[in-house]
Image (cartoon, rainbow, N blue to C red; front, side, top):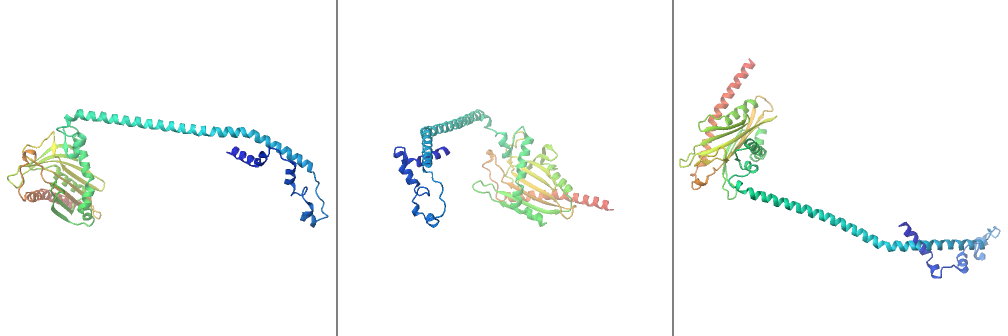
Length: 386
C-alpha cells in the first residue's frame, strides 16, 4: 500500500507536465521562481524598500535551472520505472482476489463435506440401534428392560440389590420436596407436635387417590437408640401376616405383608415393601417403597397389590443430646387391581377404615416398642448417674 501511495503522489505532481509533452520550458521555470527574492520584481518587495542598505544574497539562476532540470529528469525516470510495476500490480489484483475466493470456497466445501459425513455416520448408527431394538423386541414384550423397570418399582430376577438401591435413592431424593410441601421442616424448627391424616385426590383422570399420614414429635431418646427402635419396627416384623423376603445388608430389607381389608368382599391386599436406612452425620433417614411387580417373588393371584411409600427423619435435639425429633410422612395409594379383578370396586369408606386400621396397628406395635425403649433408656441413665 505504501508503494501505491507513492505512485499516486508522483502522478499528481507530473500530471500537468505529462500533458504538455513531458518537458518543462524555461518560461515555466521563470514563472515558478518569480516570487522568490533572486528572480522576482525587486521594486515591489517590501523588505527591499524598507532595508535598502541590506546586502542581497549571491544570485545563481543558471545553476538553479540546471539543478531543476536534473531533478526533473531524475523524477521522470523514476516515474517511468514505477509505471510498469503499477500496471502489473493493478492487473494482478483481480486474480489475487479470485484466488482467495476460490481457496475460501474450497475450505467451506471441505467443512461441509466433513459435516455431511458425520451426519450420515450418525444416521447409520441410529438405524443400526433401531434394528437391534426391533430384533430384541419380543424379549421386552412381557417384562420391561432392567434400566427402566426399577423406576416403575418392578424387580427382575437379577441385579435386584442394585435396582432396589437405585429405586430407594430416587425415593430419598424426593424427601426434601415432601417436607417442604407438608411443612415438616417448620414442625422440626418450632418443635411442633403434629399428627395429621387426610385423603388426597388424584389429579386428572388417573383417579389415584391416596391417604397421607403426617407426624412430628420430640422423643426422650437419643438419635441412635430411637433409630434402632424405628428400624426394628419397620424391618423386623413379628406379625403372622408379615414375612421377610430378603435381607441384602443391615440397612436394606425387603418384606411382604398381607393386609385384610375391612370390606369382607375385597381380596387380600398384598404389600411388597423395600426399606432403606441412611445413617448420616446429623440425622438418620428411613425410606420405603412398594414393589408392584416382582419376577422372583410374584404377587399371589387374586390379591390386590398394595402401593405405598414413606419417609422418616430423626434429628438430634440441638439443646439436649438425650432427646431427638421425629418427622414422618407416609402415602398410601389406591390398591392396584390385577386384570382379573378389574370389575371389583371397594365399598364406600374402605380407604378410611384402612387408614384407621393401619394407624391403630402401628400405634399398638410401635407404641409398645417405643415404651420399652424409653423405660430401658431411663433405667440405664439412672444407673449411670448413680
